[in-house]
Image (cartoon, rainbow, N blue to C red; front, side, top):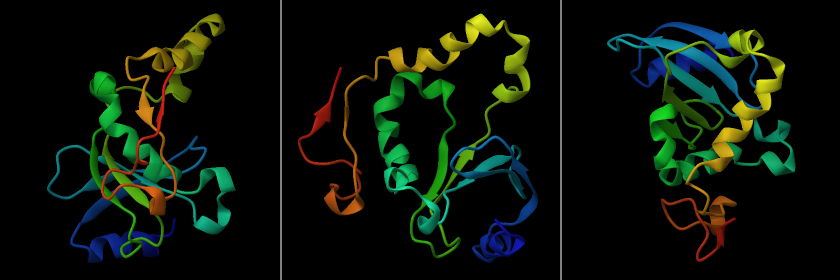
Length: 156
């Protein structure tokens, strides 16, 4: 994302004092952003342009956002969504603003754990109590404001 996009954000009455791109993102451009008037930095996650997304990735960020209500059992472990915008009026792509979690990013510290323990880190979230959630799809098939299809549930 360019400095032009951050200028667009500032025109939306948010004053950015610093922004640093965080690496290791596989889908989003991700930034740690310090906003004037806020004690803690936030994370800005910007989806790739539609033309650069695979068919399976279309509206992936919107689908992620739609699952948040079904993840309440692990909410204390997750960043909170501060803002979400799919209008493309401020930035020309979908984006989320989230709280920054305390701690060290996994790529920076995971190597200090024995490699045999790594599978336990990635698999533990799949065993959470939030096992039954609505399937999500294209925006035109969703219930207004909920981001889910009518009557369809995917459960284990």
